[in-house]
Length: 146
Image 1 (spheres, rainbow, N blue to C red):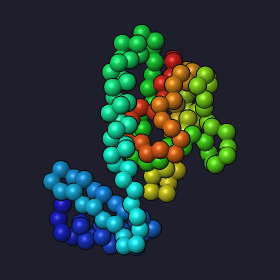
Image 2 (cartoon, one colour; image 1 turned 60 degrees about the horizontal axis):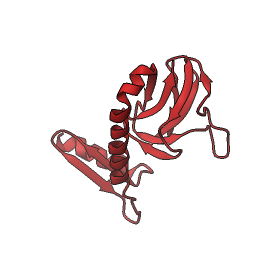
Image 3 (cartoon, rainbow, N blue to C red; image 1 turned 90 degrees about the horizontal axis):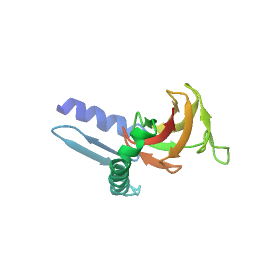
């Protein structure tokens, strides 16, 4: 990453409503925080959730294959929402029958709401993420029996 790229990142941060940003590249890590804002330590919590989730997946790996389950993974990093808005009914619950293209949840990233849709027909058997929590790229969100 060259100096101009770093300067552009600083300008973009300064002109945005972001209060904190962390960029991790192969050779550099950049953390920026605007003055007067408190940043919650979510990174450790997310890592703990990922580790415990990976242990669950390892323990259930054989079971998953036997039951013919399909997993839906997070295609991006962001905040997971089960419903289209506060106090509204969730898109899906455990036991909901879904068709390919049905919306399962929303992941908010940089103030953009991204609808996550099912890529198979089936039944929701497990929802692995709590509402309004951070998700990582590739994190398993749902298990669907096809």
